[in-house]
Length: 310
Ligand SMILES: NC(=O)c1ccc[n+]([C@@H]2O[C@H](COP(=O)([O-])OP(=O)(O)OC[C@H]3O[C@@H](n4cnc5c(N)ncnc54)[C@H](OP(=O)(O)O)[C@@H]3O)[C@@H](O)[C@H]2O)c1
Image (tube, helix red, strand yellow):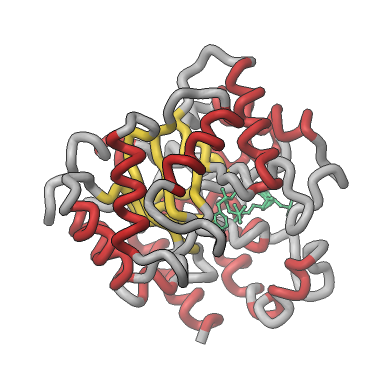
C-alpha cells in the first residue's frame, strides 16, 4: 500500500460528488427539454445544503456551458466548493503547453484562479502519455490546479501516467471511470484494486447507470434519447438487480434504488459523482450517504449483477 500523498488526501475524504455533465448538455441529456438552468441551479444548491462539496465538470460539457453555469452558481454561494474539470485532447491540440492553455480557458469560464483537480478526459491517440503528463505537471507548477488526474484510463495507461507524473514529483490523484452495479469492468480487471494500492482515488462516473439503476426505466419504458439505443440490450435484463435493490432499500428504512446504487459504489471504496437534473434527484442522491449496506448485502448485489451481466 503506497501512502496517500498530502496533496491528494482531500480527495480520499470525499464520499460523494455531483456530476455536472447535465448542465447545458443537449446531446445526451436534452438540457432545455424537461429541465432548465433553474433546475440545475437548484440541484447544485440542494447538494451543497446536503454537504456535497465536490463538483465534476469538463470543458466539453455543453461546449463550455457547464463550466460557465458552475461559475455563475459559485458566485451565488459563499460555501466552499471543490472543483474538478477536464482537458479534452482534441486532435488539433499537441505539445505540453496545450494543457495550461486549455485550463486557463476553463478557469476563465468558471471564474476562479485555480481548480482542485484537472483531469485528462480520455487518452489521446495523438499526444503521448509523457507529453500529457508533462502538461499536467506544468498546470500544477503554474498554480492552476491543486492536483491532477486521468479519466477512462485502463490499468496499464494509469500505471504509465502514475510513473510519468512521479518523474515530475507530482502524484496521480485520481482515475475517473465508468463504474456501477451494471458496469463492473474496473472491479473485475483489477484497476480498482491497483488504484487503491497506489493511493489513486477511483472516481466512479455513471454510478446510477445513467438513471437505469433508479428503477424507473425498463424495456417497455426506456429512457429518452440516445440512452434507449445504447441500453437496448441491457434494459430487458436489469429486473432482478432492481428488485433486489428495492428489497434491500426497504430493509434500510426505505432507501431508494438510486441510494442503494450509490451506497454500493461507496462500499466498494470508490467516489461516486451522480449527475442530477433537479433538486429532487440531487436530494435523493445525497441520501446515499450516512448509512451502509452490510457486507452480506454487497455480496448479494454482486452475485445478482454477475448473474445478469453474464
Ligand atoms: N469522464 C467521463 O468520460 C464521464 C462520462 C460520463 C459521466 N461523467 C461524469 O459523471 C457524472 C455522472 O454520470 P452520468 O451523468 O453519466 O450518470 P448517472 O449519474 O449514473 O445518471 C445521471 C442521470 O440519472 C437520472 N437520475 C439521477 N438521479 C436520479 C434519481 N435520484 N432518481 C432517478 N433518476 C435519477 C437523471 O437522468 P433522467 O432523469 O433523464 O433519467 C440523471 O441525468 C456526469 O455528470 C459527469 O460529471 C464522466
